[in-house]
Length: 185
Length: 442
Image 1 (cartoon, rainbow over the protein chains, first blue to last red):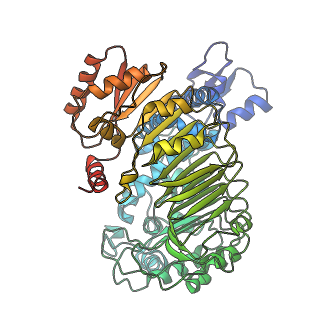
Image 2: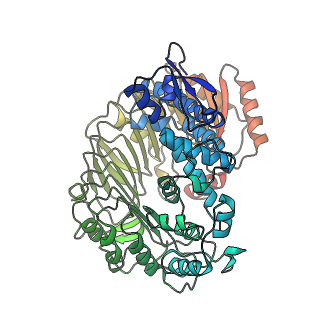
Image 3: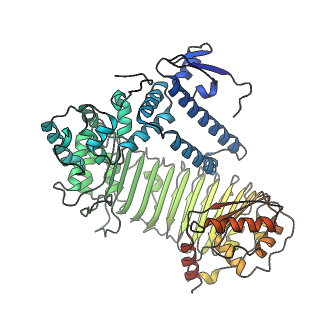
């Protein structure tokens, strides 16, 4: 990735750690991009809502995707880039997908923090990736398993549950994996 | 609510509502959403704002029939729905009741008007192997109610063109295993003028379709026409597979990637010679006859050639030489040889293989047929003709790793002036043999 002479910017996490990154990497975040372009920020941007552990992961994601985009662009320019030329770079698309899949193999807490960070910093690709990972974790689980896995506070009474199940049967189709009334089990 | 992405105890409850909706929209089917609704009040209330649902039948003898449930669910979520996907194919886990034709007009009319105004994506997949009772006017109902539809997918259906109205916002259309009652697709561009991506896969009922679409960028067609005309000045990628002899007429000046699979071609007419064709794939018994139709294109970088052994026309197979290709296309970077070509050359090395002028390819890719990896005679001749810097050997998926490594080592030792690499195809050798034996009448 072209690092020579590119402008650098410093991102400061909520717990005080500083990360120096090329400006183009930081601009993967639309939030940061607005700050840089509209507010003419100084060289250091404090991110009060993101801690160092999560910020370093976010930066890792942005660096990888900026590098991949640059590689694809330089290949396409030698082939007069078009939509079709982009489809020729399939091997590196596969590599990026594999990398992304590994990137989200983290514990739930980290995943939710990544989702919050991607949302706050407006990084669409990262938000898609992390939300999809969360959806994949829900897939196939029963209501009880979902609640347990995600530590959701259950406030649904047995009567309400019965009502929801009726509506589910009427419209959604719920696979009967658990016994009725095991919400409190 | 926790907005800080720094707490150890961040849970799903801490995520903002629009993020939770984002996650809901990615759930593969409504069962998962149904289960989410039982987990908390918050999830329950958010479920009514879901903008995308996907439904397929799960249980046999469900008290509420599948179609009724679809109508109920869509009425429930009508205000927020933007994307609807219905499949008559069960998940396969549990025995499911047979679901009737989902393109039935009375079924569609019961719910499409509820969401039509804002619906952007619609997908209807019937269970395969259903014998339809006639052509459905689904397209008429869809085009009448869903004026903002951007993407439409229909699979396993008989569709009538009667009564279709203009779908000005449709950019993406996929019809797969569909029978159409219009032999010529005469008014296609009148109905779908803004199409950018068109997939007509295993389409029957077409005789001489004429596809004339100004905005089309990607087109994939698999069918049985006698002739096909594609007039699309912005088309960049075309994949054409005609299962019987066919006359092909192309007016696509911007085409970049072209893949043509014709067992036996009556001919190809290029109305305008593309000046930016970078990748060409030809699969045919008639390769040497098809190649000259592309004379005059400039800038071809990648050429892939394969013989498609289809029985009953195999006597049309004409031997061809690599030099035929080099004579027509100067400056190819990469040549890819299909396994049947290699196999046939191997059986009897064509006498027309003479190196006229030295050509130097950057890369040669050879799809090795599933045996005789140590045979280096043919490779020696081919390497002399095209002098590549790099050769990639592609193996069928079921070849043992050890065999692959041995083969690569064998070739590397025999021809050390070249860089050797290898990869694995998605196809298995059983497919290769069955098609070949049928083609050769064995």
